[in-house]
Amino acid sequence: MDKLLEWLKRVDFPTLVISLFLVALFFVAIFVEVPIPSLLSDSIRRIGMNGVLVLAMVPTIRVGVGPNFGLPVGIIGGLLGALISMQLGLSGFLGFWVAVFLSAAICVGIGLGYGWLLEKVRGQEMMVGTYMGYSIVAFMSIMWLMLPFTNPDMVWAIGGKGLRYTLTLDKYFGHVLNNFLKFKVGGVEVPTGLILFFAGACLLVYLFFRTKVGLAIDLVGQNEKYAISSGVNPKRARLVAVVLSTVIAGVGIIVYAQSYGFLQLYQAPLFMTFPAVASILIGGASIRRANIRNVVIGTVIFQTLLTISLPVLSQVTRGDVTEVMRLIVSNGMILYALTRAPREAG
Image 1 (cartoon, rainbow, N blue to C red):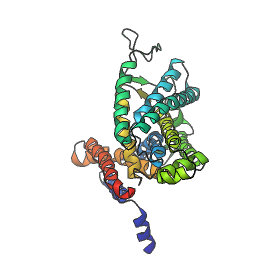
Image 2 (cartoon, rainbow, N blue to C red):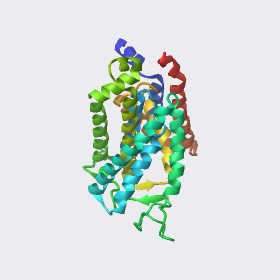
Image 3 (cartoon, rainbow, N blue to C red):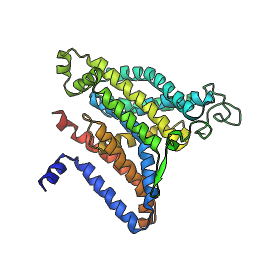
Image 4 (cartoon, one colour):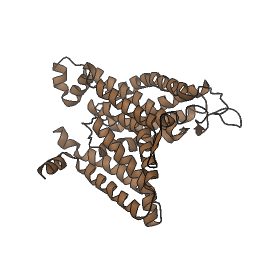
């Protein structure tokens, strides 16, 4: 009993409440005869496809910048890498990995500019990051119509210019990770390749924060004055963290798109930020503290909750309240983290 109480004290309160609500939803699902295996299959898939985007929050939080509300900056780089791969006509794993490496290269350049901007607005990174995300999405909504892509599967059929709103990936690298070594257990489909990629990305980030550069980033986030006295350059550490977060976001949107089966342009990147921020906060992170465990726990809870709530609550209420719940959970967890920030800073 004492060990249980000690464990409960270590668990973040919102994480505990939402976990209990999630368990209750599972019991309700059994009661209203919603098929559990299909819910679990969809939950596992959503965890894998969204996990890398949540992982992009870790570097900026640990360096003291806070959650990366400028996630669309990296997503745009990822979309450009995927579009170039499609323009070259590459398919399967070749198309996927070319898209990943191209997006990483593009995101390094974009991330350097984004990091420079955030350094100029120290103390207001989250607000400026949000505006930066909106600005780059609006700018790229114009550029999608002007960039010289010519692949018939990508451009508008009438006129042959400008990219479509949604591009199908079936002929390119759609579901390549999902279908790799996938198997079924008791009716539950496990996308092995997708989960392995997410786990590999988490491992790489974990190992990075064990390197000299990663430790410097941690030190700047914990105590900047002590970091300076130890010979660490805070500006460089923050720049590296922002670039790393941007690169992970670029790779994350490619993983998301291949699992979804479509590439979404124009205003779509704006809708990716709040679920990613909410996931890591639900996992127990704050605007100053985050680790891989927070990423995994938060992604599992948040995505499973959204997956299960749609069919279960639709059966119970005879109406769809999923979008309302999505807004409450996302914005409520962000508000919770921001309101407790002054206590942690002290």
